[in-house]
Image (tube, rainbow, N blue to C red; front, side):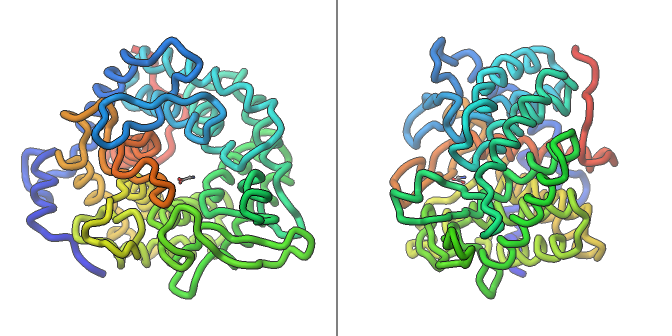
Length: 409
Ligand code: GLY
């Protein structure tokens, strides 16, 4: 496994904590305060408009591009606010989180049009319910889970991720690796009155994905196309990656996160083993600073754009994985790697601090489409903050999962 360059690491760590790594741990609490300060700046520039959810700040620009509730990224901003409430206890973040969460309500009574309902509803209403117990949130999440379930094809054993691509691309039943994340809402719903069928569906989707979505080295295809009637795999292709056979960085990070979460929810050893396999190929191929290029096989490395968002998703996933892995050395490695990634992302080079109001720079959304390249993107911020909260809890010897939060200040 390639090691990070010690000097680079030392620089990263010394920027966020007064003493060298090893003597004092990474200052997760300080980084959370930085996020809170940036979010307060964003709150001041939110437009009085129906498109008021921050999605990205393009490279060279300083203003957020705002979206409406139907966009796949709509849940991340409310999720950021809920996490800031969790991390700081400040009433302002709770009030704002409630306001923006409410905007996504129509998703719970719109017929399922995309797999992203988990990103949207679980990150907003789900975090809100976890932290406040607001009874009005529960039926919204349950309805969204039922809506997501309508996209499940039992012949294939997975959710149809992109109904719109059936015609556009000629992909009769398509499942993307990102879809793994949305299973979390099905697991949640199953435990909260939604019925066992949602649990079974999530497990089946994860199992089918485990069998069909990976190459021999455990790198993921972005999209797998299935025959709707026979349920058989037709091909593995890319949409947002460099090539059909390349390892798209964020896709691999969704896989690490998704299978780790599936283990948490099911305690099936197969998922824990698989999470480690997909994590190990990612870690083995990382560049020296621990932040991947947008695609591990991009032909112009080392000049290719980075994807900080993949690093954030992976860091958060590795922290959770480190709590499950039985091999103590391996568990320590996963946690250490996650801390190194967070330390690097907290270095000036990756921070938006002096550039714009987001948390992080240098994420890449859709390179083949020419959009969100080397940009600030809201899901990078969401998973950065989630990882920081997880690390802070681990540093304090607490369980990873906070329930009803502390009283409002
Ligand atoms: N789920 C879409 C993406 O990762 O860009």
